[in-house]
Image 1 (tube, rainbow, N blue to C red):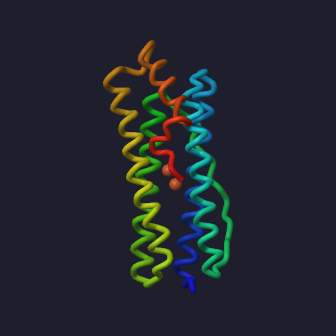
Image 2: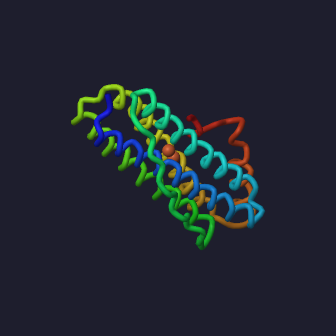
Length: 170
Ligand SMILES: [Fe+2]
Ligand SMILES: [Fe+2]
């Protein structure tokens, strides 16, 4: 049985995943307006993944006999100064999420709730992937630049994500 404390913390994490989904939708929108369809598609996939993460935790709470308490989703940031800025903000979002998941894991250890620890192990691994993928994109942007042919090449590369789902595992 879930303790009330852990139930509340898991509901907060569901909200965080949905907030991340909404933030990624805002990032996708920025790229859509710039006609960078590959990057827009990449961000839309991120948005879907975050929703899937929320669903995974949602099912876990229900399976453990807990209650789902849905909260408001905060308005996402829609102000970006450029392509690099978007990916920097994506990295920050993921780093925040990693910290939240680690905190949640600590709570599940403290509360000796082994099923939650097992579910969160997947999230811990996923966050390593997420951060590594975005760091890689930022490396490519700083190496090749964020303009002209280099930008279009990266847009095409990210647009091909469906075929090679680096970091897109759910
Ligand atoms: Fe997530
Ligand atoms: Fe993520």
